[in-house]
Length: 168
Image (tube, rainbow, N blue to C red; front, side, top):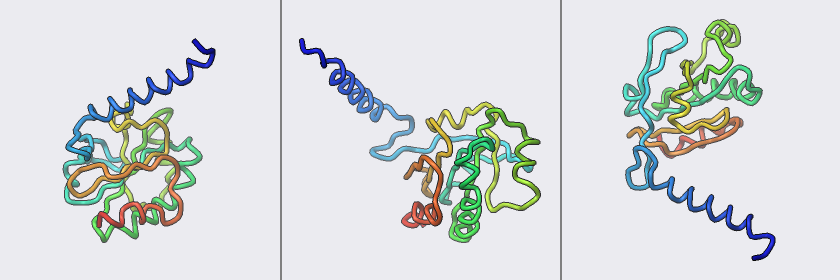
């Protein structure tokens, strides 16, 4: 057997695993994936469920205050949330609560009002259910509750508008 046999075998095993995983995704309907349901507390009080937002385009942005890329996109996320709110788009900034406190998040956000809701994922359960492997990660959910897009990394200027425009 040739010396370089390990790399091709590993690649084939990974490809088979990815293919198998694509058939067993939770909530899969044909080639669409239902967004996992959740209920999370809102930083300013109360709680929100994903089900209560059905009929709207929902943007889930997973973030943390210690993530420099997350911090860099916050101003754009806020501006986009303001621009898109009148078109039936709800932006939820879900803090994954790793090394975070509610007081620290409040201090980070300051007194300024935001165009998005900040949700607290205390045990990162929701992040895990969405398969978030790194932050920031943004999910776009259509009006029927299907995940339509996933963006890993920070949002650039106007990028969120482009990600949702065909869903409005």
